[in-house]
Length: 203
Image (cartoon, rainbow, N blue to C red; front, side, top):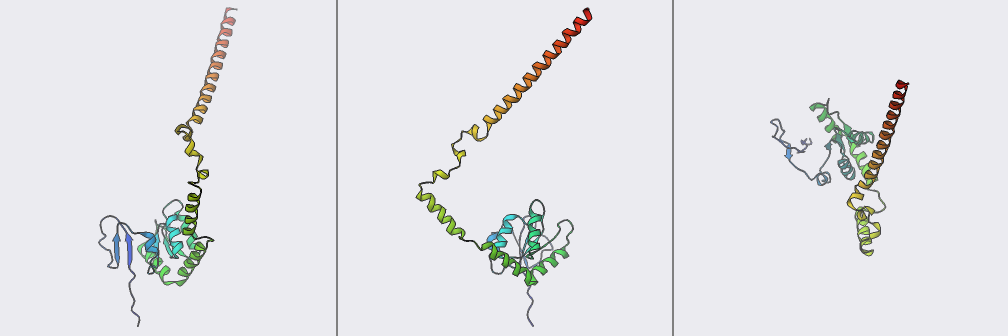
């Protein structure tokens, strides 16, 4: 009969160690996430679904248990779930039982790993490898002596032009001029009506 082993859990956690922490769980204040996902024994990743983490687990083909909190995280986790490479949990309603069931599902059902690897192959299928592309551009810059033609024009602007202070100053001057003209017209109209009123009283 095969021996059933309890999966080991690495948890990025800061604060007081929980009293109910299992013997199979280790706490770390910081973990090199990309290295961890690239380890051959990594079987699942529990995450909030940030885009950087999604890209890293996509690259390494790791199934995900997603617990989105805000922003684009919900959308990212839903995409992984739709592709069959993960499970989504609701942070506000989930229980420890739900989390345990989700982790077991992702680990024990081979379809999640297969779908994650399929997404990984798509993600890595590029005409030029990232390292080769980096070398290409470094050599390009060296060949063209700094590639000044690729410099952003913002580097040649003064600080007040860079922050558009000249444009803001012009717009502010326009607004003040318009307000001054309107005020003068209003005062002129008031004086005209006041004079006409006095003439009518005299008559």
